[in-house]
Image 1 (cartoon, rainbow, N blue to C red):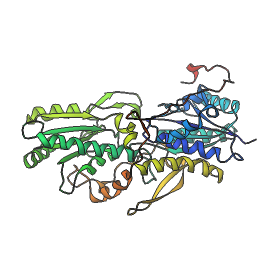
Image 2: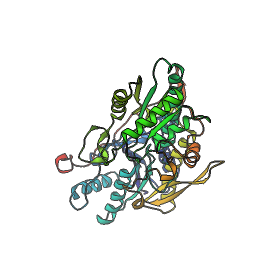
Image 3: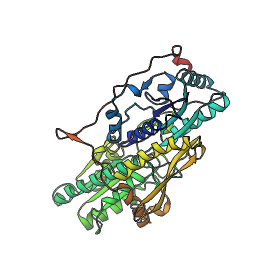
Image 4: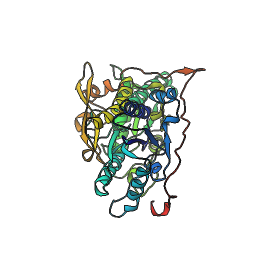
Length: 422
């Protein structure tokens, strides 16, 4: 009998991660000779350790198909990394125990760089512990910081949302700047990579409006220089929009602002850049200003998703399964750009070890020489990724997002001793 497949989601979710989920589920079901049943773990790898496995055969087929247009993480997510196989062997023994109990032979893990590391550890666990498991990564991150791909599923929709709200908010500021707000600050996500902040520049029209200063994590923040450019923009245009990445750094490399520290830097909660900038600008210039933090909204706004992003998210989910059927293992299906106009792309497998825990920042040639904007090359790269609309169905004036029932399979393993695992 064919082995069963297990899908799970990890890390910060996106407007299109569930499209990848549906791509995996649909493709697994299209190959009954290769796969048994497709299950999903609750809350990522934690759901495997805790033996919380959703039985997808109990779900309404229409609800599962609706995952393609549903934001959030339908099966729950987590921020948890597997430990060192040598020091934390008990974690891997538990994984094997759960996999065996549910006859799992294929593991599809949907997430960013840390999640790809988890998938890689599971793949290597199979070899070391002599358990036949094929582990595959399914890429996702709104930060767009995975290497060896044209773009990361989730980024295009977040970029489209940011560019849209910046354009709309700037029109609000422009309309009353002579007697009201002169500086509008918007804080976007981006720990090490400034791709989301860069996307705000797409809001600018041919004449450069709105006047904008972008603060990238890749460019050390010089307060005096920034204030000089801000004053110049306000003097020339009457107002200015400031877009700041949450990962903005001081000249010494320290974070400009931290919302909550964590022992693991990747899980340190960033934030607070916008209010700190507001204090600085207010104290040094006296300009009336407003600030906003889009936070989770930028990664949850499925009502304004990029059609290209939705199609790519779904395609990498299907490609993960099709690659396994073709005999591949320990890989990630990545997007390769074939042309800009028209935008054409394909999907190619990349080894997990080439992606796990590796971050891609913005290249220097994509940031303008003054450090506060993007170049024509960056604009050419970004524009196709926000292309097209893919609206969800609406009901009663609001988007309609069905929820899964979440029927768990009966547990077959001994109770979990959490103290020994975490």
